[in-house]
Length: 329
Length: 161
Image (tube, rainbow over all chains, first blue to last red; front, side, top):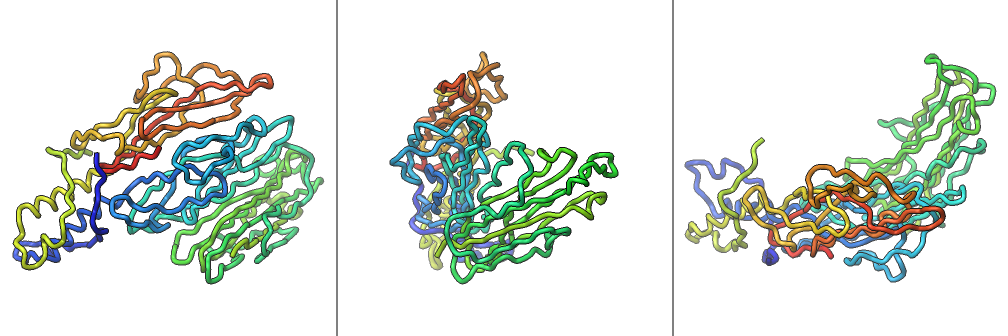
């Protein structure tokens, strides 16, 4: 079997039917357009093997073996298969074609796995989150190896911000925790921060989110750390709502980013809740760290959704902490 | 919905623009090549379901239902979904289209899973390694079942590994 080879990269022309209607002169430009369209259809859609990758690696964009066409990020979407839950063994090269050796050990039996594995189609950044559970303790790390293919479609704006780092797994029930600060991320420059306590209403909305930051004139890498927590006072925990259930409250933080020139926003959601009469199990804070690359002009935003039973609304509040750190350039 | 059917397997021709330039006679040869290129573009790339497979099985190459084209290994890449961590139940036939029964037991809780699962695109061989945690000991075997699709691209030397 041979490899299809084109001497030039074909274009595509939206040839009007009227150009080849009866009574019309059949021109060379029409014939060329038809010829190019046939070639373009042949090479347009494709699956290209990209190799094996681990957390933090960046999957590049491929070159088409048919005609040397270099795909743009917007023309590529990545799909992956889980090769291993473990980290690669030493000697691993991101993108290597051969199945890599895996680490000879792991922290314990699998617990949260996969804990939100994704490749950001816009940046190619691989984010893997894996947890183990051993001796009553959950160990969180970024173990894992994936086998990646690019699904390519020329002349497409198909990519959108993929999900970034997953929410931290909900810990096993324990005593109520105090409001927590946003988890710390890698060192960098804090470019935006939100620290609000005792909130009693939603902040922003889906149609009018709160702008957290607008990326400058070049792309950059960011870490966004956020934490939310909501509180029902102890003396409110025996109150029933109109359905006869214990009144509860739930705050959802939606944060995301809208890329310049791409109308499709990307977003992530985390939530914290508090309910019922059993404090040790009922008040669940949430924290989250995302790592992503954002192009120039990208708007990073957030809004909250506050849902609280009216019976306890007057006394129930939530805290919100967000820190956006720019790692590069 | 009907199945697209071609009476013959179309070829592809890298027709030079100069062959259909102004001042050149438009030949049946050029028209046939353009026609074939359009047909080829319609059938070139495809996702074909290959069935369910376990460790040590070999995924075959598919026949295209459009025109009976038999894909070579170099034209196929296999993508898969994890159907089960367990081994198939007795009676499993590699490549069967219906969802297979799985073994009624496993040695313990999942530990290293998947522990290096892959289909070699060049050979079609399925390799699955799975481990379990049993009484403080890691038990290693080749359990697992995959649901496999072939991503086919005619006239390609695209096989992965």
